[in-house]
Length: 346
Figure 1 (spheres, rainbow, N blue to C red):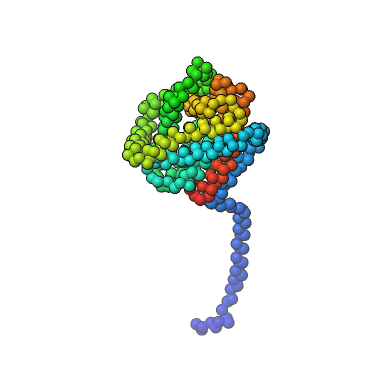
Figure 2 (tube, rainbow, N blue to C red; figure 1 turned 90 degrees about the vertical axis):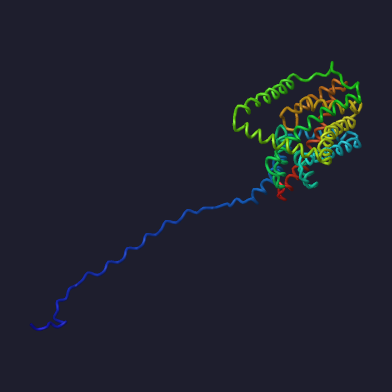
């Protein structure tokens, strides 16, 4: 056999290579607009929210505010200035009670600012929930454990009505002819609400005793509260702040009320006006309405009329008292709350 040459080999034709299929074009991703919500945004919102609330409240109640401001514009400015001073002093007395109810030393300026802010919060939430929420947050930001902060709020809540009752008894011993039991009559609805509150409190006791988790939590809370209370009462400075502030608080509130009455020409002695406020707040102050507005106001008007004040002037006095001690301080309270939030104290 002879070897074949390369040019004599049969030529095989191969089909051309297939072109690669084009890769599928991916579908465009949907455009997503993200709004990152940070702690700073939430803090700024909390700063602006109270201003919005107070603006809405003022728009809804502008007529009452206008009438109250017009009423105070015709009053004696000296007595109104005294009422404003008493209003600031009972904020300071509330700060004293708060300090006396906790062992740690709290900064004076922020503590007073929390009480001014709490005055505004008290007009929004019932049963003192607003002030307690602000104070609880303030104590937690100061590094105080939740159990001890809650025990401080409980001690504050307990001391105030006990001291108010003692102040009323001391007032009756000082001015024995003040009380008129045969003429002092509460509104039937107020009595029913008070009775309902007492029944509710009594119904909670067997519920707590029957549920094991609630019983354990209550037992732990009472243990912490009693331990802190015993420790506080071994320190004279805390005892003075707690009980002295609690005694001054209702007297300063009543003094502000009597000052407004004197500014409007209320024909009652000073001590009678003070006593009217003490009794009205003690009688229906536990009814869970925001700031006691409504329930306390009705009893104040009726009690002033019982003591001989004309009904129209009694109503004007209560409206003027609310304008001076509640509506005018709303703006400082909201501003104090905003400053505390911005400085991360709340």
